[in-house]
Image 1 (cartoon, one colour):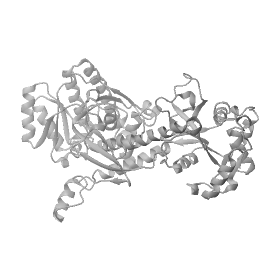
Image 2 (cartoon, rainbow, N blue to C red):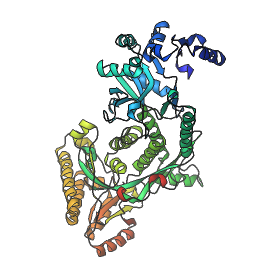
Image 3 (spheres, rainbow, N blue to C red):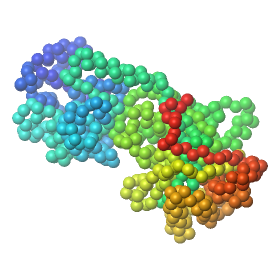
Image 4 (cartoon, rainbow, N blue to C red):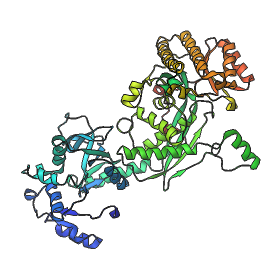
Length: 572
């Protein structure tokens, strides 16, 4: 760590100076960098700000500095301090480190910060506030980075204070942030903190043992997370055009990712989806021709890369620990059931659990959905919209509004989970060989960007159909919902054309129509989803699909509110 800093100084009082001087001599630390503040009793102590100012003045420091309390214990010493320095250098101001108070820790024992989630600027600093004064549980500790332009303010602050208590560093930051309005940013560390002076030996041993037990309890134990496939029931594909959609996660198909802490970071290829061994050159040729070259391994790698980038930009320091990551999936390839985003989503869930990233403070669910989309579009150049990622993060039956005003204002849309009780029986059919499923998006996006009247009106109509479908769900008017699903497909057909939809999709739609079932595309193509209210005709239709060489199944909705198995309990 020493190579990150030009000089390191230790400030102590006169009473303990000789101990630290002897320690410095024995450990190769420059003895001249141990600074004696001259105090011997609590009554004549200078206070932390005065001690800091003494070092700066006596050593004529004119550089940016980092300040860490010498009596601070950290429950996780594996975080990367270089991350702190990189984040500090990326911000136009000073930096204060914070952590989330543990259960039982009282806010009145710490400096408490309120942090803007978008800019990461600390909007308010409260030194050991009374209970009820703030709802924040973000505790600032004596771990700061100050820019050299801020250093003269230490002397200005000291001129206002008379007692050592008032010269505490927490009081300085309270004054600097609340009164002086100096820009100070916050960075979260993945750890808890204690002070040696506030605990006795027995407390110290117990505190370290508790965190050691916590680490042992998670170390080596796999974290396994599952994300389900989804079907778009209404409005798609307008999610990429400021429209509205309703989609549902289904438990028929899923992607599962497992993560175990290991010495090095390893991404394991899937034996089927990422083949590295073949029976022959002909076997390699046949598999490559049918499935292409893009398996799931690239999804894991892109998610990990983007996750580190996100945490670095958002001021979240990560523990320096590694893992082995592997995945499995039974979602059919290339039939528009969001198989790729399911792998990315499950990987993100594992990373968040592994690094203790919360979905309320660090990465809210709406932000998670946008993150997953960015992994695919920015890292892997996959054409996609937000719908799949939203429903896979929120799970269940979700109404989504992607209107331009919302997206411009918040960066994401309005996502509302819907009641899933007494749903009708939806069905799904998909092609065994989706190679002729058509180029679904065709030139529609360019036409929309050009302001093509037909495309713009169609996207507005998709939104209107979605609002009507939402009402049908509320009233449980399944006949009306079936009509709307048919209208959704016909509208899509008019905009994208039969040539773009492809013969495979049109063939499946025609089979459904023959049996009087509502039908539409649940995604980008290769599958159809439908609603048949006549159970006898449903069974006859199933047989017809199978005879046509399609796979047919009754949809089993995934309702997160009634799920009996938690992600962390899933078998790897």
